[in-house]
Image (cartoon, rainbow, N blue to C red):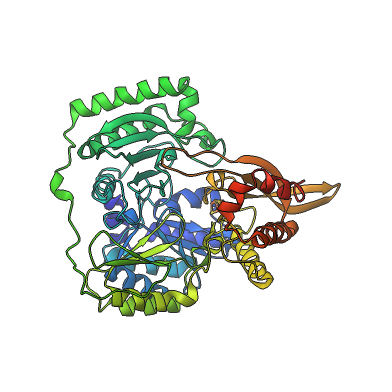
Length: 518
Ligand code: SF4
């Protein structure tokens, strides 16, 4: 991807410019434009509202220089929507054609990348956001995620794959990156090794990954990355885009065991042909030390494994931060050593490596733009207001629900996180959420078609106990606020937090939901 990016830059993005102009003037169709632009990290938005540019953000890391760059570019191009996406990338939305080219030029000139963040490429490598600083982590997987990203960026210029390939590393105790159900996932074990899963994924026909490696030494992870690419090239469905994701290979090959054997054959061939072992020296510890200050008690501030250092959670609603807050954050971070941001797949951001005093300041800066409760940390994809394939506007729904819940005075811990996806692509992972929603329409009567959501209940994401939720019917969009308020009021009245209430009242969520589903 590096050389494609360099070549385009040398040519002044002539081809992309022409295609983009053609697309906006309707001489180039979306079918032609989309794959060409997406491979370069730019995506047409709904109704030609503008384009989105996705910045590669390996393992969710944003250092101070990169944050400054993001803020300056957003200001320069008057971007009205910066988005922390569920793939841990950063997206600039609603750009006009000339802004797309100008932004891409700035990105490349500053050493950053957008290439391969869309299209049939290995996508942004995901990683547990608090890797290396979480006192409770299973293993620091960040060095391996970064090594995999570097390997892919340097080798996958023409990956020749049927579709995209999403890879995740998980070293936390909650499986935050969903490593057990990605195209390729590395899940840390208590023994300091990886269990490796392949050909999983959400979207239509969701599936958990097939285990293809057990207790694998972390330094061997690149063999699995290369073997997965080879397996996908060999057995992926090249004739039908809709069935080209890795999870369809399992069925095509005859089931889990057949897929596992096919993968292991490719793995053996890679091990014979290549030397891909990573040196253990890639692990670089945090050098910063605390200064003896302690922060005030705040639920968003947590101690790190490094004595005297803290992280602050910042969750802008729907993953859409206010630019003014990002600017303040960037200015404050400029005078703090060793600090960085880590984006999370649930659209949170963690600011890490802070002293106690610094943590207090960062908590104050982000206070006015962060979720106030578990419910407000709900995950919502960009949705149909922006996304060209969206069916429902998940961002709008989330904002309306939060407003209604605040106005109703429902207690802060009475509702769980929702996961809202605007279409079957399932970018918000609604299948493994306690309450998941997927945009659709419902024919209520002849000629009466209404906006609606498929409801999924009791899904779970966990290290060893993930499960898909139960499809519980369809809720009209107009009934979403009554449903959530009804649930919130009932839980509030018991004085319990949602998860305690759910444990003490099995089946009650289903009964409440049934009053609203069609
Ligand atoms: S879930 Fe659908 S609507 Fe939402 S961002 Fe993904 S593709 Fe777009």
